[in-house]
Length: 241
Ligand SMILES: C[S@@+](CC[C@H](N)C(=O)[O-])C[C@H]1O[C@@H](n2cnc3c(N)ncnc32)[C@H](O)[C@@H]1O
Image (cartoon, rainbow, N blue to C red; front, side, top):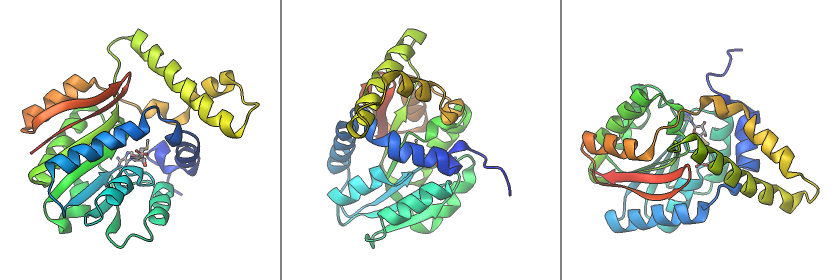
């Protein structure tokens, strides 16, 4: 059996995220509401939505729920995540699931039959790529977008200083602790913190500051680029073609 290229391709990391982390992300509802508002303002339905690094498709499904005439394409390279998203969208005829690794430009072949795409969204996925690959990927996304198409990246970004990193970690651990205490009243914050700091996927994080990433988007040609939401290391940024 070939070893997984990424921790995200293992059931342990995929399920631990889906069951124990995703619902504890601080500000998740607001992040999705802002994403939806931007799509509502900048896109005219019906449109095509590509969710890149979709996990169980939480972001794309949120938009499909709000824009029922939209088509959704969900892309990931992790079999456990693909199984989760296939299960979640099995009742949605307008949803398609594709396997692709956006670590190389070959991912575009997986969606080439879709023509130009109106909305590309991504959640907490692209920060696993080195910075030069992030920039190349943003350019590939730009090329795939229809005129006026929108790209929104909800992302784990770098703190300005190590002190900011500590603030974010402690803030996130508070939310993780509150989430797990709902189902396990005896859980201790220290145990949650220990698991958080020693999590397997942490080594795959290659964080870049959001202002630098916004500048990369502008350099590629995106317009109306901005960081639309930011709390410590959680940011929603993007622009349109
Ligand atoms: C932290 S999870 C986030 C999932 C989902 N976007 C969300 O907001 O909950 C990161 C996802 O990106 C996927 N991913 C990471 N690197 C990838 C790559 N090179 N190609 C495709 N998917 C990737 C992982 O398999 C995982 O499903």
